[in-house]
Image (cartoon, rainbow, N blue to C red; front, side):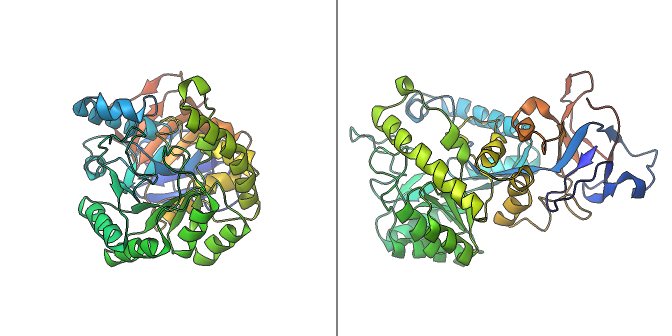
Length: 421
């Protein structure tokens, strides 16, 4: 099997990966230099496949359904059923090859703790719990009729004190990262992506509050230019979407050591006018091509990019389509894989243990049937993800006969060449 380590450009064509009983990688490299396999260590064969680090999605909304409207979910759905549906979305995301996510609104801390404790299967979770904007901004859940949907994870704040209070509420609720809105949004009924949301002093207050509490980073929903510039100047950790990015925005992100998470899956997703409110349909038409041009230029300029999909707006369980979108706008397949592995690990602050296949790192890895460097779209098809492991525990294993194994997770000790189609 081939091995892509998530950091370097070189591919190991005949590779072995070994883990210890605690789920840490002890060897990843050429089979010719691999330690001799022990009889008491389980071996999983991977001939014809490509081994990669467990992949990241740095912008999800796992508590939000992608197949039903927010209105239906807020007003009609049973909350117990929604918890179970969220659990199913977590599992589908893991099965797609995503072993770590950063959820930016709608996922309570309890799901993070349930995954960590092994109560449910899902990606490793960092969550913002909620989203903060000003009244009438992107996170204001008030409908054009004047009625509020009462979405618990949406917070409004209209001055520096209000922002500080909202950030503190998010931290009290268990947020790993603070999500703010510095621009309007395509899905907003009351504003436009070109509008600036939180003001400069309010952004600074959010960043300061995050730093005071164990250095919690800030992610900014920033679609239009004004919001992108304000977010980057305000020292946020990541600019989300970035559809209106220009040269100044690219330069500021580079100067501040920030990340761009372009969520291209949302840009490339077709919109059906008969299923979309007229105002939103027109806004999508106006922004999609503009976003593609601007983000293609950002890719060409080598802006620091981490992978994120906006899953919830886009379908859950098909997260790795984002890599195909990056490649379509000019990124090389290897760089797209790095964006979803080592670069995303840096954004989430876990680069010392995740995102790379090397000794001493956690054994989070994915086996893809085929070569994604020749066809990056292979990663977008969950059925081509033959194996998914976290900390050395196999959560998904596709059998050579095409069947799927989903019994109790079991530890893997060694992957070597063998009989994967």
